[in-house]
Image (cartoon, rainbow, N blue to C red):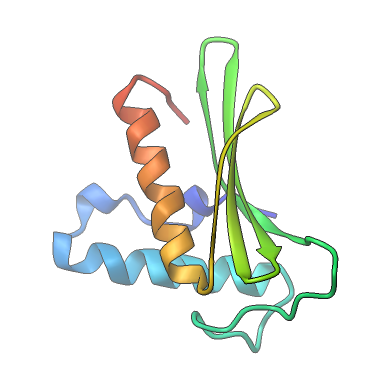
Length: 118
């Protein structure tokens, strides 16, 4: 699956009022690529007892280190998982995808502010 970053236009080229729209459109694209073409932003796949990967939100590098954020299904809805060098650093679950994508992008922005790059 394509990383979310490749699906979002450069936000700095857009007026701030369009950033949320661009992020939500990118979310819809990532869900379609994951085989959820009929899914809306607020709908989540039903929990079937097994976590399913929904897509990679982003990957950043800093020297030999690699940080990756993935979106997964979760019993309450969805989950954002942040790994650095293959170790789970942080995870957060929620009932809707849009806030999880916003969270993933916030994590990305925090890493980029510390010198991590695409």
